[in-house]
Image 1 (cartoon, helix red, strand yellow):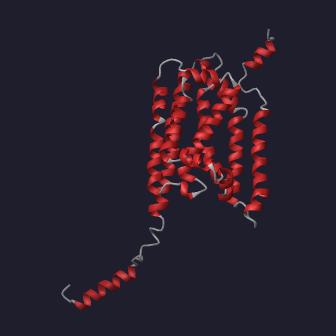
Image 2 (cartoon, rainbow, N blue to C red; image 1 turned 90 degrees about the vertical axis):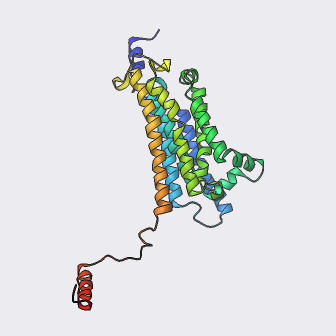
Image 3 (cartoon, rainbow, N blue to C red; image 1 turned 180 degrees about the vertical axis):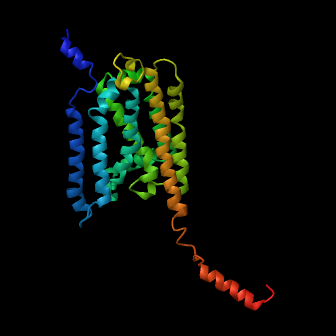
Length: 294
């Protein structure tokens, strides 16, 4: 049996819990990127720079985000106490991490990873907008099935496997938007329509969570309540994260694409010059001189 001290510790949601497996994964990602840049990049590119400063910053940000989303305290709170934090974790892994990873990947590295054989054809197929969109949304729906969620949060291998699935599906979903190889990308208008559709489907499980009565996920119906959030409030907050947070992020990209494509250079293309007061008085003076009756 557990002692009183051990019980008190288990009821403390903020107790530090080390995750060496997460540290190992992040270390492998960082070392692999460094090796790819310094060794493969030197062979393929031949001359520096092998990556741009923008790509390097995106990789650093992506690595930090991967570590933050998978380690203490976000991982532990999301796995043991709050489904809303679980939802935030999935948003970090599906909406924020994949674009950073794609931005961090130079074209030569992308081509080296994809290859030229059957792997390239598989990647080309699963990253087609319709296929990628359907695949991503299926994963979103499946990872919200109560039975699967309740089992995964108490089974670390299954939990991490679902995270890998979420990231891979999200990478496919983001490829038509921000692929290192522009031949995979949609047109500006296509990107806007695609992102709009991606923002609609997640609202279905989000609405279900928001208006559900009682505890949808029994695993989170526990006595210890972080920040005093009830089970119902926790579920509603999770739905808000999924519906509002995800939609706002995607819509911000749609607005950015619109202004970059259709408004860029608008003011530079205008040929008019501001009308000054002296110009106006001179014009009226010339009219008056030409027609004294006015």
